[in-house]
Length: 203
Ligand code: MG
Image (tube, rainbow, N blue to C red; front, side, top):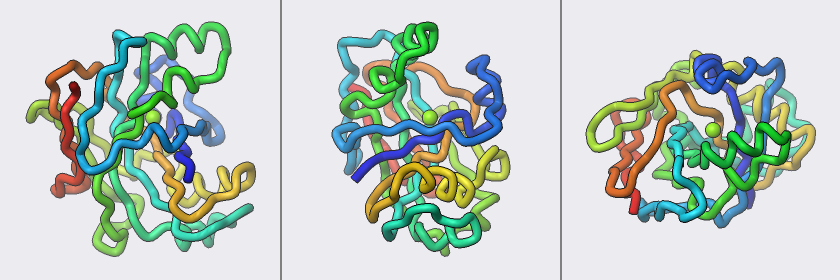
């Protein structure tokens, strides 16, 4: 399986990064070794001094697809989860300066913790889903899919032009504003609506 991540999909996050608001989706990949499941801890890596949290809704692809039309894209996922797109912001800053690929800052081991998934029939309309991240009990990021620049369906259609989607692939759909550093000892808890679906510690 592969992990596809959408960058800058909420305008307020693009602004806080001093990045332009994109006119078409930006995507990058993480390998399967990035995954953390079952609320296992994240071990702070030696190569960075500035690991940032980016809480994101995650789509689980349920069948293979290529060149998927927007109007059929909703048939390619049944379940939505929540995850963290961990980013080594200090490394990313250097990479961006030089125009180099983002993998060193984004695709490292453990950079994609994911929680439990819920069936989308249990949620509101796909364009009105609330989600948030708490650190040590304090809310640090909050989003609603009404603020997405590119909807779930638009993202699936766009990415599938370039990359064939397969069953079990995950799509991280972008983070709202409020990204920031994590520290060893922090407990991260992520929610869709009021349901806690992910809880883990930084070690
Ligand atoms: Mg992200």
